[in-house]
Length: 82
Image 1 (cartoon, rainbow, N blue to C red):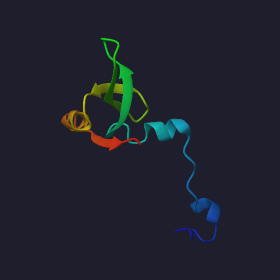
Image 2 (image 1 turned 180 degrees about the horizontal axis):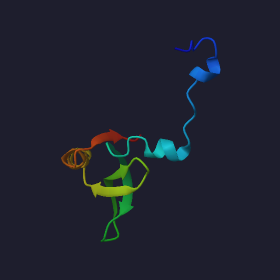
Image 3 (image 1 turned 60 degrees about the vertical axis):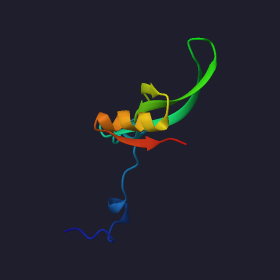
């Protein structure tokens, strides 16, 4: 076995590309963030947007609790974006 202290560069992890980082955990996680939008009646409204790890919007919910429940129903782990 090689001694990692003999060559510190060999022990250093390689940096992740933006694409690697975006796809990391994609099959297991969904992100929730509060958004403001204009509803069908032209009024300002607020909701909770559900996104895949790569940023693709997957849904919209009227509350954070419903967004988390929908994510869990699809066997994903919900995470908040602040």
